[in-house]
Length: 312
Image 1 (cartoon, rainbow, N blue to C red):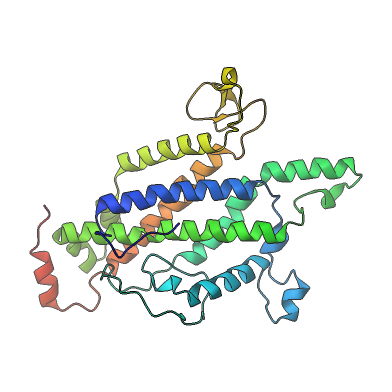
Image 2 (image 1 turned 60 degrees about the vertical axis):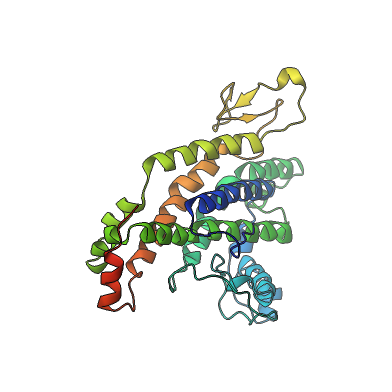
């Protein structure tokens, strides 16, 4: 998902909210696409492909996909945008002249992508691909393939990694947009933050940026979206009220997935857990880390001028 930072006010909370809501859609749809393939753990194991070793690359298939994809994107100046962060280091310079972005974020080197890649591979992928993996195992047993060979691997390495890259880039943008949130709130009322930056207090800074009611509504909205997008819309009118909840149990509630006798395309609870257990907490870490470095390089006079500003 792309966002235009050259028009309007990219630090307005209305703009930030619209970007984050659109990213919800992107992430859910990409997860649904990935869930149709089995786990394929081989693509996440470093050194598992001889062909990559022959090229002198010792990383995993996914890491190679990221490197090749981000190399092209870097040449197209993707990572000159303040809301884009690569997973790969040592990327080439753009072949296009830089765009003139307004000054948005305070200079920083915060990049949460190593953590994003780790939790995605270790926890998210096994969960969202569980159904496809079990179906694969059943089909292999019918063919007489049993034991370790029946699980996890359907051979769709290219398709799976292509979608993985899209999911990771969307999650990365979502997490790093926390910097925009922090900058917006800091500029609104610097004096509320400065004491807890000068005498670092992570908990107080987190309290200042955390809105429990906003998070609660986000998770409700996310569940409703995931349940809707996971349904099969090719339904007869009299079946349109058949719904299953996040645990796959049929009901008429709005929190499940509509089905016509089949399972939803993705486990709804898994999508919600991705946000609740990983994306939201990591975003808060990015927000607090950004604030802790917000005064770096400023003189005492600069800080005092900021501190005299009061929130509206």
